[in-house]
Length: 36
Image (cartoon, one colour):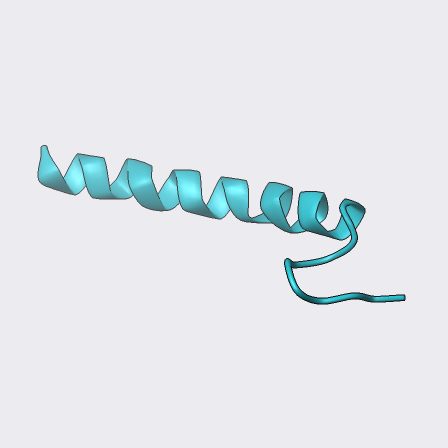
């Protein structure tokens, strides 16, 4: 069970990483950093 939970956790992390990076890029970059 624990191994399965860990697998799902890493799968979710890998799948959400591009979404988060894309969202931060569209919003003007990470907090505290200005790309202008």
